[in-house]
Length: 121
Image (cartoon, rainbow, N blue to C red; front, side, top):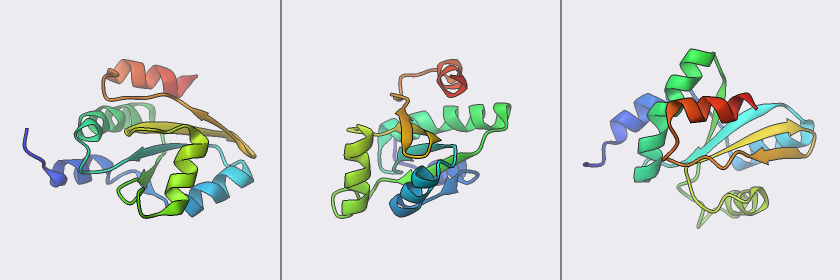
């Protein structure tokens, strides 16, 4: 499959893009949120995102999106990923309360139904 950034951008256009710093602010405030970490150049992310977007639409969810493309050059993203235990993307992290989060251990092999199930926990 050829890389098609257009499809990825289409599938993530309804996600709310945030920075690592904004994620940290949400976490500190305990603002409940689901955050998808990924990047357009990742084939696994391109496989995962259409399923996540379908679940978002069906369940009327808000998904925040942290583009991890610059992980190697952005210490804020790297620090966040280390703390959340996010070694690879795609990843889903849920903010549960002030300073509390859950790494939902999502990966591209999950079905749409499995993604819906982990988001409902």
